[in-house]
Image 1 (cartoon, helix red, strand yellow):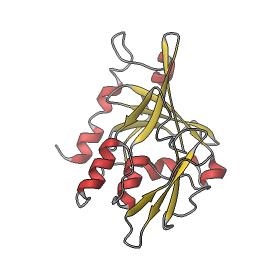
Image 2 (tube, one colour):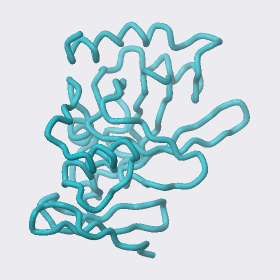
Image 3 (cartoon, helix red, strand yellow):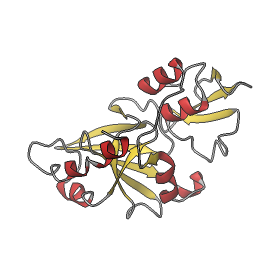
Image 4 (cartoon, helix red, strand yellow):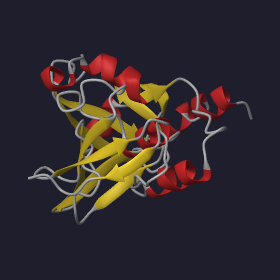
Length: 207
């Protein structure tokens, strides 16, 4: 099956989502809202965290990525077909992203001023109409992407696929040799790239 068809053929999955046996993490009404949403593929892993609230499981993510938020940490892998609601969160607050394979609805925190872009621009940055090719990436890049972690020796592309696009208010340009990521809402860490564009050091937690 061609990559575009592999992604778009999952449109049919949306119609099967709202049913008693389906795995759901939000009210049925919210899943209904996603039926007409655009189907695209993730260009990077999304690090999310689920919280049980009564009978409802809520998945949260952030533009800051939160690579190790604690209990309930899940990774939505690169190239996962997702439905994206462009009608909500465009002025800030949250972007709704539905993992069409696992029926997980994620509320992604988004702050336009900190990212220096609109939510629509951010959606275009982290998604693609077709799956992303990992051809040409090194073994350590592929391991980092699979694990959702940064390792010494990874390329910038590998780190971005693994951890997500770095928050622009701390990493204004991905041409920089230092990128900052958050492990959770309270701590961040830095990734130092060498002259060859590969990770040479991963810093400790920053309060």
